[in-house]
Image (cartoon, rainbow over all chains, first blue to last red; front, side, top):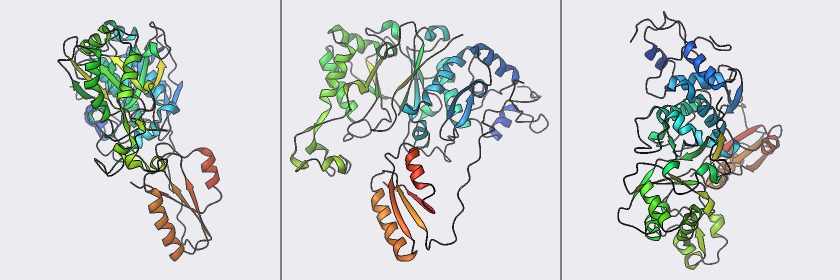
Length: 356
Length: 97
């Protein structure tokens, strides 16, 4: 057994390893791979680090995520040993103060960390970037996202119904991991846009709701397609929520080609959507089209808010709209992944993956 | 599946994490300093105003202090914690919505 580990079940106490691990309350509701010392050792060896290295303190309980603890959870999630550097980078990222894992894990809202993988590691580990990118069927996506969830629960203490008090949550709390389909994207990748090189392998984590599909099979011009996408972005959180933060737009390869075919860059898309998504104060007054709306401290700035034409942005800045290209090469279906990113809340966080 | 499991599995939890305990509750609120902490949720102040009113009517505290977190989404910042620790006998933290 690697140093620091301790047995959690005796052979005579429980005959069935799957049931024994359920009984310990350390699963996500699905069966886990029993974390035998051999399996954990292989994972630690594959990442080239010492088991005792401290990677992060995981909120909200600030448990110590050592390489070994992360490896145990990764094994349980079904990861191959070579996935461990990706899981470690994701754990580092969610534990960055800017991600606010304390809030993400404890809120009554529904966010789950979405892991977005960029760089050569996608091909090396067979991370799905194409058809069915958010769906089942690919081991790397299924188990890397799941390993992060198990670390949040088993090391961070985010037990559903006890510390994690999400009213609804969403299925991404089992696993939530995609790759960007860089090879078919007409633009620089998300990671390159954020200062990494094309040969860097990275994870980005976004505190995210479930994906919302945006279908448009007829637009053949960038402006037409974005006119379809904008109203779907307008309903993120609710249709009167404003000053929202990082939110992901996942453009399918066909949609991306339509937009790029008109010569538009990612910055052009952001600017266009940002401007389309502003609304006058008078439309955002609580009581008009719903009881929610601008908060009191904002309303106080306007003498007659019910008549005021001042435009309020849906997103705090164009840069809060994050764009990746992913999904199958056939199909004019994109998706919006709303962030849990109100003011002073969570933001997208990157980490480089260190592959030995 | 084998019915003979391996001898031992590794523990996925942080076995050295210190269990959290709630603070000891005082027998009476009379003569105490009570801090009411607004976590910045909508209408927290409505709830705390009413609690303050009831405490002044019924509990005869020495003082009631009002504090506010910058956001409900994050833990209270250390300077705010330090302001509260040592200067209050009882803390009431209110959610709202």
